[in-house]
Length: 287
Image (cartoon, rainbow, N blue to C red):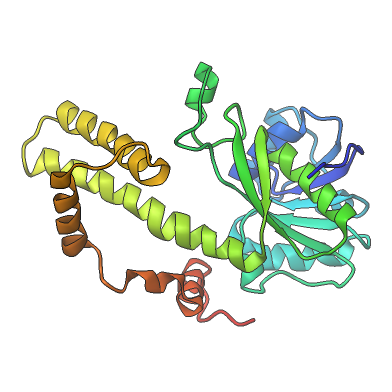
């Protein structure tokens, strides 16, 4: 999609937090007019230390094209309830994670455009060329990444405005993939946190077990694990090479020993509601 070339006015609410700082570091490099809002004293100090001026939230959000709510999921209900009534009609309200949007926790207004965008982070298969790209594992600094986004509007001009903001705050961006809010929630957390991040943690626990229980020297265990993780991902996700027959047998044994037969239930709607209710500290998800 071709994004707008119009200079936007953008407010960042929570500009002194982790994501707020990342977002602001990219916005300050652009020609967009940006207002930085932060309530916590520690966050305000980080904003001013970065050489940026703080604007009171009420003033920052009143007459802008895009409001970025860079606040934790657990704060989005309260923050959106305070911010949404202040917005001019047609403002794009952008959140950075789908959980609260899917759970229906955001304050609503019919004349406000709600969007959510989550970074994919630089791919494990990304071709990197500079030390800065190699060091940028999270994205948003030097290594290119994709973004998955959703928007509750059929207005193409609003989608273009949202994409312009998304490409800036997560820059450098390769592509923005548009899905529904529910699909984005199925990707994050189910696909990438429930599965991928859990498997990453399992790999670390396995490394510790090899070293601490089996007595394998740490450098040897780490080297073989990291190398074989790369091969495993390349073989399964890129089809680079077939696994050996002996490896396939070991993989079957691993699946039988570790993976539950009904593990794919986590893709069901009720299971998605269950994990999100835990993440958001809710008794249940009501939509």
